Image (tube, rainbow, N blue to C red; front, top):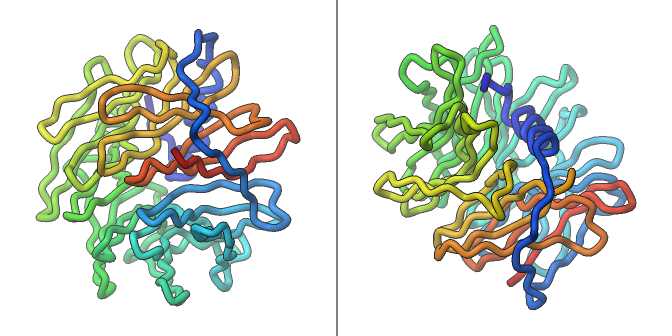
Length: 338
């Protein structure tokens, strides 16, 4: 599989792959004791949660004629976040333990500039040197931020920004493009890169800058979704059997396939510090959210009136945030509490 483009473009293309491969399935357990709450910022016609922190604050973005970031408190209060001089939208991709958020703000030319919003509401924008677009995708407990930037030819590279603002750029050795997606407490970064054969592969970058690469067996494209503080990884891969499957990678490098009900279209979006992962898979042309517990058991869920469900984030308490396409033909946010 060839490179899918920017982080946001990649996520959009992945949804299309799942829809194309969805098939019938017998179904998995759906417990009734979990509470699922629908939410939307006022006036939203599309709500897209992208992260949840340890205390249950949820972040993401929504549309009501323009794109705006949001932060949802535990009590359900929603705060809209807009970066100034960003008429093409404010997109939030990551949230820290203290509820600081990171993302990208798109200016009048729709060029992306990375930003971080501190707990006190202060917003700082920044760009990698000579970048033609910069996006922050994750922040850890120490305030370290990782993300991507594009050069003048449109190729993606990685960066690490320290809390004091010092910015280091990096690429996987000999990679055509480098796409970080997550950073843990230790400063270990994970993501994917495009090699010289235009194949998407997984990588891990330690805090001292050393790289290692990995792919599940039979993978022709590997996309890493997240890393926890123990160094466990989760994501998805495209197999040589034309299936999209999830994976869980242990600290010692053992890779376990995640294949709910033998579905050929599985996407993992996040992993928590307990080793639980969340994502969605395709059935009969639609999608359903699921959680895979650390013991390997899988639970499927959907909000009421959902036509399609995508679980996108999970915290250590097992609370899941995501979005669903309703029978009103709008995208809504949800939070699922076990």
